Amino acid sequence: MLEAETKAPPGWFNGAQILDKHVAARGGLQGWRAVQTFTVADKLDAGTGDSVARSEILARQGTGASAKRAAAAAQAAADAKKAAQAQQVQLRAAPPKLAPAKK
Image (tube, helix red, strand yellow):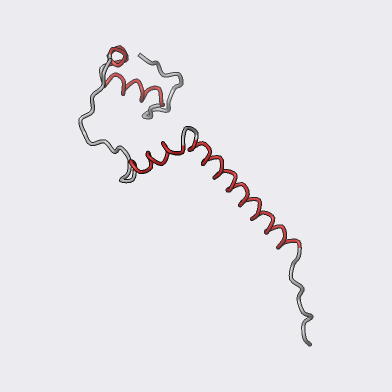
């Protein structure tokens, strides 16, 4: 069984104590380690309605297409950030000239 490493304030549990109670409530650590299969009986979300179409596109593009798209998207984001920063510098570097106040 896991042991608490630090002492929690009275009336409070630390993370290790919470984990100890959770494990004990579900059969103990030896019981968990003895599990060889796990069965779930419920609905499973296996993607969106366009999953088949997206899978076909990925298959046609070949291995690494997702990584290439991710790299291109990262580069586009970096370029957009640089452009925004350059525009901010430009705006700060040339403040508008004010007309002299009329008396």
